[in-house]
Image (cartoon, rainbow over all chains, first blue to last red; front, side, top):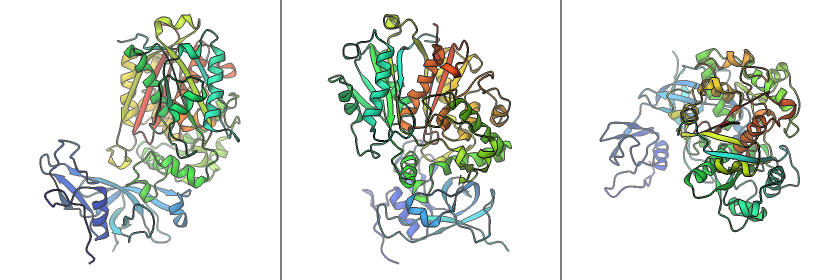
Length: 144
Length: 391
């Protein structure tokens, strides 16, 4: 795998920033941070715990599994998403209890449903503009 | 400070709302200011106005920043201090609150507050991105979340949990267009039918075109002064007796309950307490119907009805012109229009007209107490003000 340059803190730890969160996505990992002092799970990662103001936060990998809490099919998109319209966006409650917004990619003919089980997946970085972050998205868990 | 006047409105102005071709923000603001100056002959703007607070969401639409200084200059009010306040669609609600605070601090006696936005020249793409600025860029916009889509997520959650129906959402649009048809300054002065609303195209499911407010140009302003001196300027001031503001997460996904907009309830609690007024005391209210679902949740958060009852409350007719508490007599953001930075003080303008008996065909007879509720983003900011005719 290509070497990824993370921004690091003075202890050489990977700094809990949004960009580093997306850099992990580029490695196929959905990551959060946990506050070492109060135990709060923080997603997206922040450099300072919003609960106890500790800056001692450690990265942990999430399962990437969750359930769809609510969704919408978008027919009037922003320019960058025009070619994908209509597409589905939603809020996914992850197994760890925290939630993430994201696109829900379903097979043709398949419908989104509140409560459906989803798993995270990742796309490669877009070519132009800022930021150049690889997006995560969600797919239905394969049903047997 | 329960129940005392914090500041007094001695005059108010509103531009026409709509597609104001050939006019830029500065000129649109002047038309609102001219009305406010003409309405109050005892006011000498150059002598009396000591500070300006101007709400505007984004400098990107006209590539013009520094709107505070710009408006002071174009009003011929230099060298008084002037600032632009930005809190997304609650920018001029924030300007109003800043003006009240300035007067309460004792630093100044008389101020002008207002807001302006120029939006109709933007393409649909650009307007979509403009409005999305108020959500979480890196987590929401980055994944293609538009503003209608964010409120669609709220609407779906509310519909699932409380069995709120599309017809109830549409009823908000029908009511507000009925009111707006009587407002000569409204962007679209036309009634609509429930069938039209229900058959309009989907923007972000479950929200349709007629669930969305309008993209408009417009400006609004108020002249505020210390309550003790208000009668020097006018026999009919309107008193501001409560102000409340609260913040919530910048990302919708961080909230435990997607069917509430808690910042509204928090801001309302502060304002009600300060005013010593409750929801049952209100005669008229202007609420932030950026989307129909927002008006329904606003009823619940303001305590006009119980949690989850917003859908049945609109159907009950109690918020119609002849109901117990007429809501959005101006036509609201849906019909009057939503030049985002102008909306907060435009709501206060309508309440000012109502409490001074100047609302014409949409007058609520004998209105004494009014409320405005201004929302920034998907509830990341809420600002509530309470107004009284008599103190």
